[in-house]
Image (cartoon, rainbow, N blue to C red):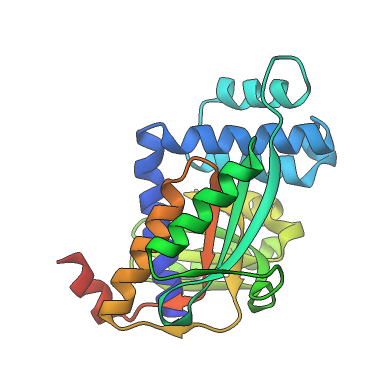
Length: 249
């Protein structure tokens, strides 16, 4: 879990950089629009919308952007019709990957995703081939340099969290999907500000990568995440600390 938790921290930091460039906001807006269109515009009765808004707020997405995305979903402004597609596949060393896509052109997305896998020593798989290796969980990231571990654990447990993983500069608070928002609110009530709160897929088992396979895998993940239609990429790799340090040099 430690290696994967470390990767969660890296992804969070990368997401913050993407947000600065505005790259992430368009993807967050798309997710909010689709959730509002499919389940209604009231977050209280639409869990998918509530979670999409929660994630957007985690990355400091302006409220007007959130409201605009909800209005598009309600049909109050023009917008393309997007559909959700999930691709499953394998990367270097047999790493299992799940790619969540929101697209207005299914054929384009399928061709793009297939091409990315092919170029980076990976292959697409049939639906269900790797999904069983993951479980849906809530994940909340907290800055470990600002808060004491005991305080984070106490607030997280009060809100109904399952676990708190301490990984150097961050805590990852894990929850069941239904209580993600409740746990985040419990942390806030305890004086702890969450840096990120979202639903994610966590691997049940992991593949430990050496430096060569780690480089190849991260190139594949980066290429997938850079695609405009890709919302999320989940993988079951574990990168040891010493390999991460080598990759950073």
